[in-house]
Length: 434
Ligand code: GLV
Ligand code: MN
Ligand code: MN
Image 1 (cartoon, rainbow, N blue to C red):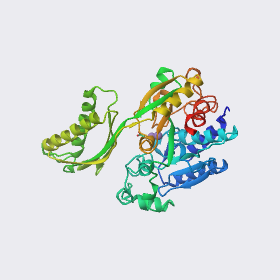
Image 2: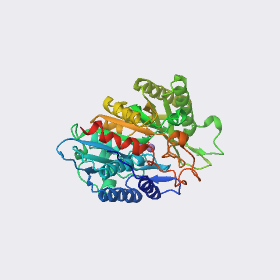
Image 3: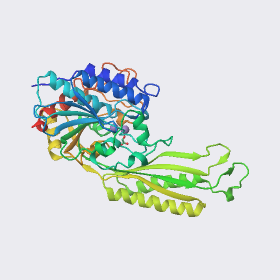
Image 4: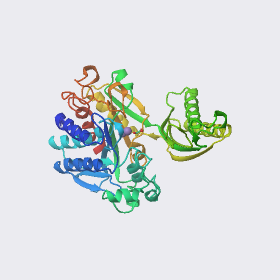
């Protein structure tokens, strides 16, 4: 059996999905439970229904599209990713794994394959932390890492609870019911763009993920004294923003001083109050993201940043308060999946390399309840979380840039002669379905 992906179909689906966005093209913004997200969910569900898959949505909106196997009592093989997109993002992050998974199922159907185990294509809710501040909401709940109290605890920027927001979106019931348990999935494979430059630089077709780095994030609330930007003399100031700036720079130098390529630190949010040009900032909220494959090294950075906060607070006469959002351990991919991907690549002459994922994914949490693996495809210049994110369907050596860059090239289609057809379809037909 030689399943064949329909590249035009996947490309058109990614194209339609990209048009369901709250940003001007080519940028994509699709925040969880927004009207746009709900329309995109509808689109995915319609496509799944057209493929004859059985749909189930849980209380937080994780969506399972099942191709029922001849032994439906066995734990299912699952694949999938997310369709929510951070503000001003691109069109491939997450979406490739959702529609690629669906295409794998359709091409297996078309090839006459009949699965013994059921196959689930999962669309996870809110992999991105945009709305509720916490990434991988759906998969955290599925794996039992996040407790049901999060429903009342997590709030969006308008102060609405998760419970309220998901209820309005049509998802009700206790979050406890989202927890899947360890026998729901026999294995999980996520296809994703690499979001880094290594595959492209090496001229490789496929990244075989062996581990996912440990992410941590926290908020810092800095309180100083506001006042008139003209009248308050410099020696008398307790400027909350300047204190925040020092802390951010200290974070950067702490991370760099480690000299480890796998340690990264980012201040992605800096909210300044009152935000007027002629007013000294009295309050600042920073949101900080630190990641490492070595959790001890990451935690060291966190401790040093905390210490920097204390020193800066003392020296500048401000207060600094911290609040941890998440501190997750790293995940290791299952050897049998790593080997299945490697042999699928070898069998099809695809150049591959084993690598870690520095980005986090729903796989980080699925790995807690099922043997899990990830397949990376290259993305142009390693760019992601930007409108010019682009993944080509062509193998590295043959890849050409299409007219107009990221979305402009209609002939360069993901999954066509390349990665989805050769790899994603191969994996469920091989080792995992036994
Ligand atoms: C996921 O989007 C991440 O920030 O790694
Ligand atoms: Mn992302
Ligand atoms: Mn992603």
